[in-house]
View (cartoon, rainbow, N blue to C red):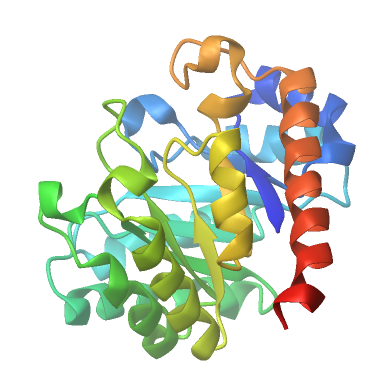
Amino acid sequence: MLLLISPDGVEEALDCAKAAEHLDIVDVKKPDEGSLGANFPWVIREIRDAVPADKPVSATVGDVPYKPGTVAQAALGAAVSGATYIKVGLYGCTTPDQAIDVMRAVVRAVKDHRPDAFVVASGYADAHRVGCVNPLALPDIALRSGSDAAMLDTAVKDGTRLFDHVPPEVCAEFVRRSHDAGLLAALAGSVKAEDLGVLTRIGTDIVGVRGAVCEGGDRNTGRIQPELVAAFRAEMDRHAREHTAAAPAAG
């Protein structure tokens, strides 16, 4: 399982760089503009320069409307600015067809510029609260649009968490559908260390966190702490070892 950490600016990215050995992807977002709020192009460039070259940089394009042209341009801007993982929050898409329109435009815009870029179709575990596409529709949307991964986060950051809206058995179905489609499955949404056992067991490929590695556990006012990143990774690795050791017995 890959660990994706989301700093909100260059200073936090430097803190991530201090913990680079413990994380896999540095994700650029702007939390005060939403769950998948987009940061500025120059911030993406500065963070790309601030973290080790072997650590890929991800960038969120925003909690986007159903405007394929607008979103495609934004996604290309993120790729041009140095991101190799491009995440699109399908906030304003109320049907799978709308979501596919947006993601196809993003895939074309990004991969025409950089064929090895990694496009992530992101939906929301609490889709019922904001009126966007059903979480279990995301793997098919990602597959039909040519995206590389399907992701779930939470749209409303009010203290509720991923499993409050999509219980573990439904997350497991999300992961299974993603894998059946040849996609990676990413899960986020106020994930905490105590969730790692379940996330490991269901085969999650990428786990995204911010609050869990911020001072005080607060994604908005807390700052990422390198020692919390290290501790979170240690817990991930522990669960991975236990899961591997248990696999032969389960078989």
